[in-house]
Length: 179
Ligand code: IMP
Ligand code: MG
Image (tube, rainbow, N blue to C red; front, top):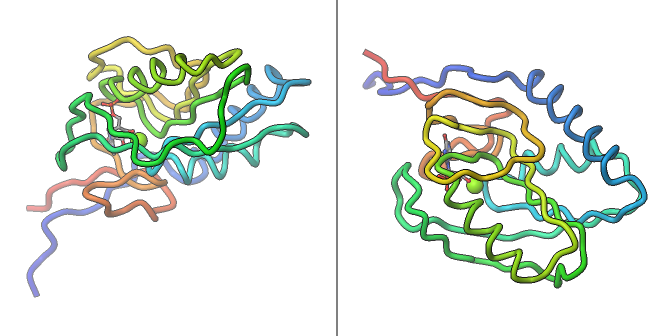
């Protein structure tokens, strides 16, 4: 059998992630007490993070909606051209919206989505991202709730993919070449 070309090295453990996600949930609860936020989950990468996050937000009233996007191209580079593959199921006019993203890399995707959602006249629009890679920022985007700032590494797992693989890893890892 041929040896594997790559191995997965742990970057953030499931426990480290869970602890941060709990804290983010508490922050959002504190800021949205008495309100009815709409969590707008950016698919596909954010679905694992969002599933844990919403269960850490102890609010009576909130709703969840999904926005599926695709950056053109198959590479690991964002092109900034974002295609909406599936739009929200309801209007967000006059709603308190929180965009839930897995990772802000160049910032182009979130920048595009913020501009798009702003045209629908929400009452407020905030961003909650699990990860931020400031080294690669091309546009400045406000991140109101942030899990971790990370180095310039391509991370996989906990919903994040490399060519659609590894989304099911329960932790965040990096791929390292063997040999
Ligand atoms: P941006 O538009 O460059 O900010 O990139 C946004 C999207 O690129 C993210 O939502 C991810 O889907 C993907 N992405 C960026 N960096 C990574 C990474 O390290 N691992 C997996 N996906 C990534
Ligand atoms: Mg994403």
